[in-house]
Length: 137
Image (cartoon, rainbow, N blue to C red; front, side, top):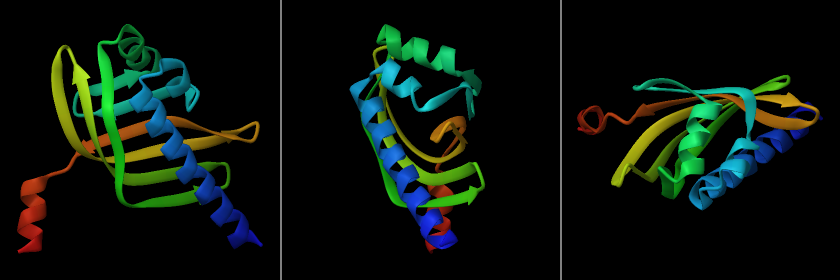
């Protein structure tokens, strides 16, 4: 029974990830924000960004996405009311009039509150394509 429940929650989290990606492509700040807890932060090579800071760029139209896709299989681990979803994401963003194509490893930490999964932390790391090529040789 525990494995059935765990599999159901994994599928729920995958669906949530797909819906969040669709909200990103729609550039809908309110919908994007619904996937995040109030204390959500994103950690990247640029530092830490709060929910309010990130969404302000989307709301203003300064940040838009025209593509946001998970590539490969996601790794999902559930620890009670906490889950970690790790996957590779490719996306095309537009910021300040410039296009940015990204290929990143992402880890999202979710907590279950009132029966809903909310993301509290997103960590993104650019894929090291040079290292990838060396490993494949």
